[in-house]
Image (cartoon, rainbow, N blue to C red; front, side, top):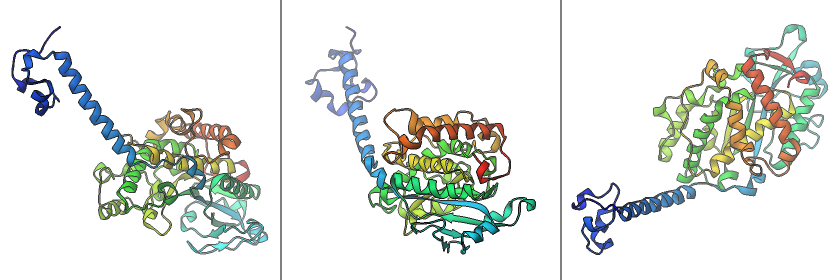
Amino acid sequence: MSTVPDTDSSELPPGFPKSDYFETFLRKPVHEVEKDVLIKRVQLARSAKAKLAWQLARQQSYPIGDRIDHVQFGVEVECFFLAETFSQLGLVLGGYHKGAQCPRTVDPQQIGWKCESDGSLGNSRPPESAGTFVACEFVSPPLKGIAGFEEIYRFVKLLQDNNVYITRSCGVHVNVGLEGVTAGQSIHHARCRSFVRRFMHFFTLHENGMMQIGGRRSRVNNYYCASLKAVPETFGVAKKSTVATFLRLVNYYGRYRTVNLAHLNSRQPRFEFRIFAGTANPLKVIGYVAIALGLVHKAAEAAIAPQRKVGNWQLPNVVDDTKATLRLHVALWTRQKERKYGLPAGVWKKWGKKILKNQRWNGRVFREGTRGNASRGNVDR
């Protein structure tokens, strides 16, 4: 068997712990120690270090498991209501972030749906020939579990049945609570900030897929949801940081990004997904919620994050990313039969395959560019 050349310890294989040289081999010189033994020693040392690093990384994750049923979420649905129908239902338009309580005609259990104005909706209105409309945004209360999915489905179905109009100005925002994921920890904990960094990496990797499942190209380069990937790498939340540094970076990103992180430092800390295109299709909206919960769930349980994606956010790039929707579904739901990230108990069984089919269809519509600028709720898919 070949041996190490007759030389001193300075020529040991790379990575060999020289301090253990004489103790390990009973003061034998290098030329009396077989090369295979030295290589095995190095490999064992590296393996031990890798295992330790993995254990430390796992300690920074948040195993969620069944707690996903208790993670809070909510939606904000922007649309145009026919003024006559709006009045018949007894709706009142509240101020921006000062929404008026919805009446029992649309919120029979009075759980806290609100109706408010939103200045961004004035940029693209329905055609005048369609009638007089009220631009409004409906904000849900905090929800959770399959009951929350069912409530969102019911409410958006009501909007669809009342023929609300959806234009290129409209969007659907999905909020996911932070504390339900982190068991009460805030961004003032280093472990929580590490989780947010992982989330941002996962988000940039799947941003194109989330754009595509909305089926509307108007969300790309939209002022109110600018790409997270457009931020220069030097300003990315890529390394460990103090609370003050972390908040400065979050403020630099700003509110009007595909995901708004500013609310993480509020009384109700949460992620706000602003990336999703407007719709009055209830299946499409609960699909958005499932994707948002899935990304947060995956990032929370991941020990390490994929490399952050930068660039590739202009419309031609997003259209040409033909595998974006597939990557998103494989990452969250279809890679493993039993593992479905972000879905409370019962959701996949009730809607899972329908959500996949709808999102694949909209992804194809997005890439083909066949969706118009405005549509009634009852024809939106």
